[in-house]
Picture 1 (cartoon, rainbow, N blue to C red):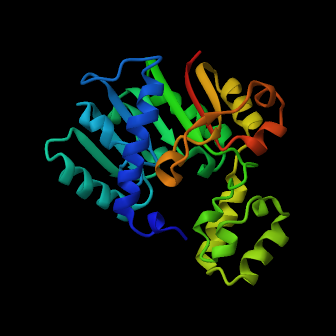
Picture 2: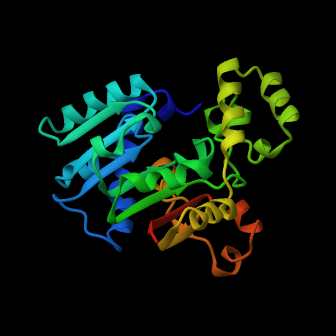
Length: 262
């Protein structure tokens, strides 16, 4: 397990750096992000992704099921900007009335969609929170990429650095985790990630079936977040590989896109 997964303030700061340097510029290619922009992040955690929008003067709303993370988000954002126009809510998004929350210019989800159960239901549901001209940003690791199983959270130093073992059949995968002494909670979390992991092809099919269209999309061979994590420069997938279904999933460490209601 990496230090960033233990020290949540480090994770908060790293999220903010990646969003500032890569995500907001990416989004700004198709929309304006300023003091008039309302931003909703689903699965906001400690709010690190929201902080750069707060600094832009945006009104932000963050929702997460993890109440301790929401409490840390309130603390961290208040420490950074006591006057932030920020609302942090611990709740299941399905339990929130869109009419009470209002509509948004941007829905922001980075490293979240691969944790959502029943994405076929979730994607159409998002439309209730978007303005007619609103956009949705997604950034996520496709399931078949080397660390698509989020095995970096393993306690075992070997398993945390071993690529692709999350692709094993479920019984073998659970047996491997237990044989290396992973705690029951870690095994439970990793099994759930295996159940919800999403491929590029499946994501794009759900986008189309849910009535959305693309403003832009990019496949990264080197995830933009690897700059702050490992000092690696982001690099997009070559045009030769990115058009080959299934194979591209093994080489795409991150998928970025902006979509809108069609």
